[in-house]
Structures are given as structure tokens and as C-alpha cells.
Image 1: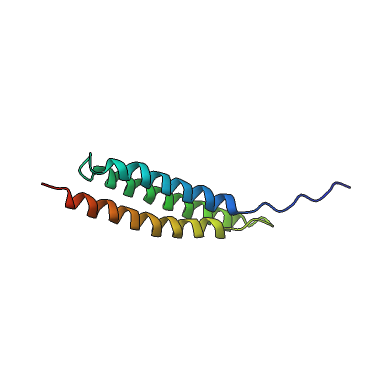
Image 2: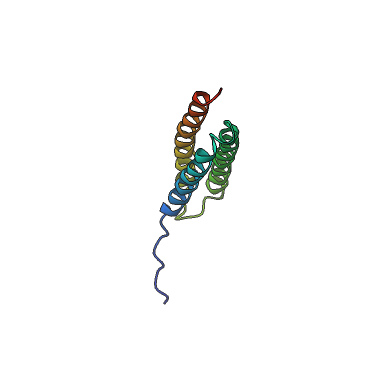
Length: 101
């Protein structure tokens, strides 16, 4: 009889998504003054794509419904990325408005 494998923790999904959105915000936020706010639009498109991808993966995981796997980390990641990304994008846009001449 083989030993039971421990259930995989869904923390990596949340961690990877949050690190990605924070990393994008940091890099593109630094570039915002140099691009006159253009990088804020790129950031908005990228984090929107990340939210969409998490929703699609969550729906696939929900439909597949294998035991021990949950769709909740993907839906929670989509929500958190949406909230954090919207706030970061707002700061980028408002910061670039103050630098316009």
C-alpha cells in the first residue's frame, strides 16, 4: 500500500498572482512618468488579462470538479488582482496627470 500524498495547498495560486500584479505595478509604475501615462494603459491591459485568465481557470476547475481540487483560489485571485490592480492603475494615472505640462 502506497502512502497517501498530502493535499496540495492552493496558496501558490494566490502567491503567484499577487507577486505578478505587484511586480508589474512596480516596474510599470516607475516607467509612468517617462511614458506620460502610457505604461498605465499597458498595466491595465495586463492585469485585466490576468483577471480574465484566473476566471477562465476557475471555471475550468469548477466544471472539472476533481476531488481535492477547488476553484476558489482562482476566483479569489481574480478578485484580489482586480482590486489591487485597479488601485495601482489609479495611482499611476493620477500621478501622470500631475506631471502633464
